[in-house]
Length: 334
Image 1: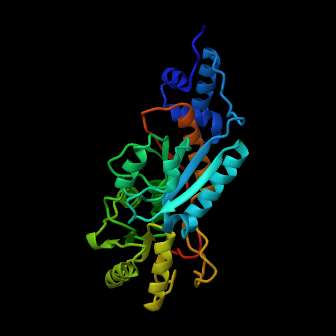
Image 2: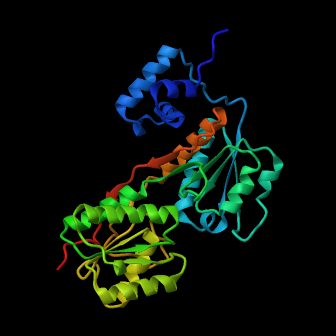
Image 3: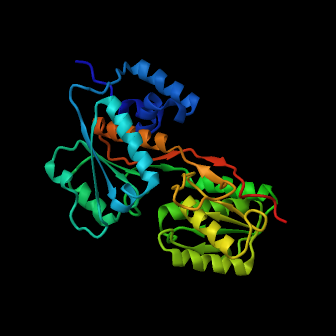
């Protein structure tokens, strides 16, 4: 009986990861044309027959994460909706259960032993991850890596996005550009985006004074207030925020301090999330970095289904491209 050709056989001959081969079939627009052409050629040469998802055997996947992000967070609400929509087309059942970061027990869906795989949305502790891994489910993180653990992860390209936002300000003529981080510098998302900020300035040999980088917490207003007070004293001409939530708070705190955005100071964010109608809007529209959350959700599901069908011990990080969206909060410095 001839050997059954698998994804890993194609990946080995092409010299790429199994995830890249999978994306070439499922999300070709994310793969370089030459790479995809080579993958298809090798697939044909080896006689690979692509396995279609068997709708007669319905799979069950779990989506979990912290309650404040799954229930209250607009970002992960949109990703969850995209996963559910794509799963429905494929005949995949979805169970959603959140939990508190103070809970020491996992959601009940893990004890039922019916899950084929799990998607974890947002930031989660290493302790909870290790508890989930003990169940031996195929596992994909979406939106936030976990320091110290090598796991399949799908997230937006934060470094590139912040780089482009900072580059935009430099092109407008800004030299005194500050940055507000949304968490501790050891956090992988915070660190990645801050790297993008530094790279953009270093590329143009623009100095970055130590006090131009302020550490805040988008969940703690007092920390953001302190960061803004510190920046008002040193008078940057522009501020880049790690995310839109921080940019929103920064906008209103600067306005309360009597500063006009963008005439006195330019401001940019990251995520391109619509703000709830009950909140005072930003006028003009915020310059930000657009993240395709629907695509992020679909790719996360595809990665999970791929590792369910083709288990691998080699974890990969899948980075989704982002795009600068120029609004009215950035102008040349006066």
